[in-house]
Length: 373
Image 1: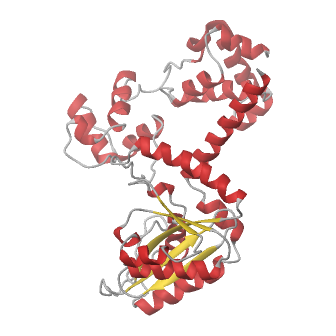
Image 2: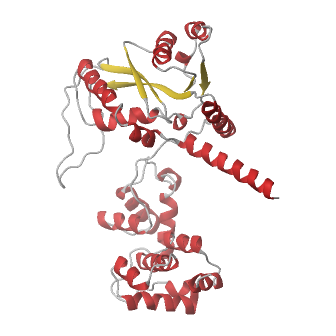
Image 3: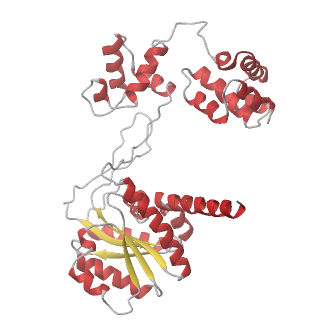
């Protein structure tokens, strides 16, 4: 155990505890000091820490000496000059707790937090008026960053998802044993009007893109399938709406293109069933198996990443105007992606693969332990 690790242990801390103190620091100065301590615990010399934090090496040494003498209290920061902060420690803690929930939970009937909502919260709660920059300053000081959220699917059944992870891990092993390919399949639509995404513009300039307002029916629809083991992607353009018949047609195309056993993983959409599909699956020696994803689990479908990729590289902030132009652009993407198999494997890896690999690793570890025992 290193000398610093022993010092941390004396105060009931370890590497994780130092990191939690850093993220939970009440002021930027305290966060900086805990950051320095964390880097020192990682084996960084004091001079390198000082350079990284743009501080004098003696200052970093003073922080370390103060921690050795007084523990966490030695890294506390007390305001010694200039005007006091607009919000004291308790008020900042209350603001942090409020922003971690929705504004409505704090009694403000608005959907999301922004600087104006922060100002309203502080003014109503404490009678303190903050400006635009102060509100943003406190959000950053308290550790908040602006991120585009993902849906947390409340209808998803955790037990069924865990069971599917186990089933998928077994399916992957079976596929290796029988030289089968696993394809994730899904459908998507790309509209001729603008798919608005974040855009870099000069400060002070509006973020605008042109649109001819094409009708809603101007869209290009597709099936696609992705194999994570090989990075292969296949697609089929679709005229009209998807149905059991079109799903069957896509499976026929996959079966014709890829020899050997196939395993198809897709969701529980009604178009993934029906008489046409059942009749096709009864074909002798078809060697094609369908596997249903658990309900409300799009994050398990690797093919979702293909659609996100197209929206990022092809349709973002672009008004094509007509279905034909959308289709030409998306078709070109599918032609090019055939040469990007390594990137396909990286981009399309989902939460399912991570969970299955972790499960397999745990099982292997238990097996080794049982042999050693």
